[in-house]
Image (cartoon, rainbow over all chains, first blue to last red):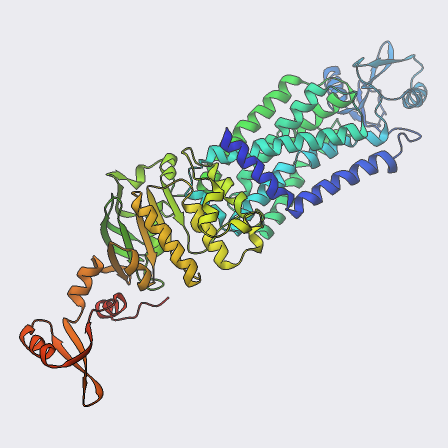
Length: 322
Length: 282
């Protein structure tokens, strides 16, 4: 443990002299300023995606759900507005949209069918999300939590560039200790970054237990993936360009975040998906499938750890070591 | 004790060996000087012995245990000073040593003590990126001593150092030997090898051309002659006698006005040239 902490301290000193670290920190500061000062808290009407069930013939707006359960799931998972047509009339199912938006929708729907329009708020804990804050979970997930992926990789490549990795190979530093040291360090940094971003934009009224757990373990997962991914590379240029592609794929769940009705299975297999959805619930209320989130993160964490261990052992600390 | 037995290494896997049939033994507390020009295979052998390169063929044994079966803890017992310094340039000298000291699970020498010994105390808090080449070399050497290693691997430890600093490093190497460390000294400096080594191995073209104590090598390959400088008719002259012709030498010494007497001992450089047919240059 002493070795891990000492390595962490020295790695922190190395980070403070790394340009990428300051670029990331500056980016976080810019995000806070944009969210707080440049984006409006609301627009005349919120944008949302519509999911319908048992819509009458000729109804074309929104995407039809296969069942009421599917409609509820689309609303839960990402903030769509569900519209249920049944014998009792029209029911609007929503995760916490503003009264203004719901009234506008109700008015629109009342012209379709001469029946009462009711409203169902799925989660009493859900609250209306100001427009400027809706992107905060996205920024946290794809900026703060990526600190380990990007900077962990940068430190590894610097070790190859300085050839210090040769000295590490003849030191009693096992791959497990190397991976644990870097993962712990960046998980702490990622948690601090995420917390700062949250406090400076959303404030303190969030589910801190879930938020901190998501931030720490989320950064850990991405750090481990980053270490495994970076190990075979020898220079910054090749690594950086391919990393951009990988990070692009990892950002695809933003589509489901903004259009909840689009959440195919392959999307849910991307590691950022459960984290992003869980962040929204932790920061703005609402319900999330905690078991699925925990299971997905545990599976990704375990897989990434094994992969990082293997790749660091084979491609970074040397092939001849047992 | 380190035993290297019939080691071969082929980088490309095409049957072209960088080193072939390398065998030698280094007894505990002794220094083996591994001499050879650049490209002779010195670093290949050191890298195989330290686990940086996989052992393809042959055997390397530390106290009877194969290098193939050594685990991470073994690295608590070795120290390696690389020819090319490999340090964290963004950290200071003392931070570099602290970083590595934390990796060991055995007691380590206080970093400042080592920095003092290699003449870097005043530069301890300076970033390594601001160090000169010689300072980096000294820091790399100091790092190799952090864990009081049982086995010390030194690759050109005095390369690029000024004579005074080089003498200090030699003293430190002798101190390591005195406390019982087994030293594997890779160099192309004949002078360094001659001053420190208990045994010298000449590596040429990937094979060991000769391996013995420096004295034995000199006896075997040196000229057994004595050169006598004497004064005659106001001029200084020279005469060479074979060592086994003691009667003639004795008669001359008793009659001549002898100024200087030299045994014609060969240097390791000359022996290397004699054994391999090429000079021992970098």
